[in-house]
Length: 417
Image (cartoon, rainbow, N blue to C red; front, side, top):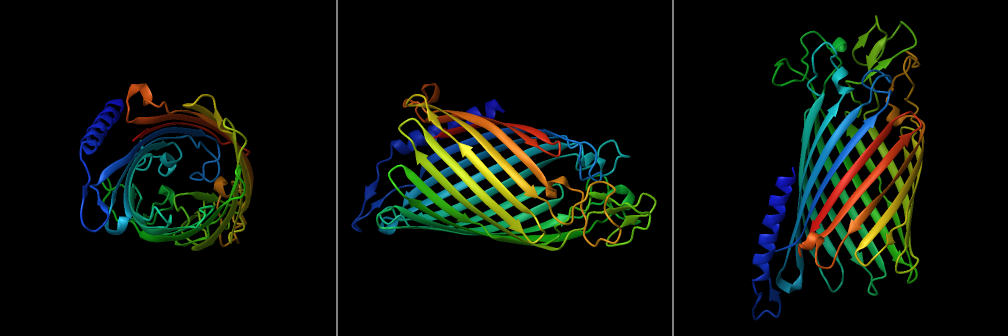
């Protein structure tokens, strides 16, 4: 992996050098025509590991062990067009590879289930036109994502407006994701002739169901004083389609299980069933206070509510400290309290008369803490003396949840300009 990144960095440096030798040409239209140039390249790699004992795949009990290795390559290019408008093109390619012990329990009779490990690939492209004088910008985004059991097509737009004194900024985003999910069922709840979903080993048919998501974001940022900045963020969203994960089991407290979807009366078991629509409304406030040249205090609070009955409060505190002109550290803490959905109950505690039910602890009442920090290097002559290696950042964090889930994440971020 390191060799790949070195090749990418070398390629970028070559491109940057070639653009540095190109002089912009002028024409009679009173604007400067510039060729497309590389603004920056970002390469991010993260390793994530979690463990717990409340797997939703096995009904709220069992191993939640999971590892994920994520890599993102981000390329930003720009050019000035007619009228002096700046055109920015951002291409991002993400590749994640995970292994999951709980997904391997979809069919415990096999050596390894088809979804025990998988790779997700998700490219996206954004085009934004901005005016340097007014600060206004408009952009369009297209994205795609593919994994073992789903594929997704996305599109969106973004708008930025800036006041004349540039102390107030309004941002608007709208996105739509049209997903198709492969309906994978636990092995004991599959109808006769229903496939496992493994395209290479099992040609029997499986159902495919849609899940469509629509989201918006409204952000108002304001410079209150020379030291204090504030932002108000509202992000309503709506989902419709297959919102339940149907390979997740639910176990009931009676031997008279009847209801929606496949059941197994011997084990008093069904597949997870949730409503086919969901409204979400997060509202957040961010305050940044510049204490002096060395300290910044960043605070964040978010309230979340949805029509499934979930209510959540999240508070964050980050204090970046500038040790030298090119070295900084940022300790970070986040606390979250969540009131769970009315459709949740632990293993064996659901009533057979319920219409909707889940034993996924992500939807339960819980408290969580995340503590971490990062160190950032941005020397004036470039990291390791490479002029275009603009910054190197290492982040690490530990997550603890009251349900017993714990996780760790380490991230490496490199920027080239």
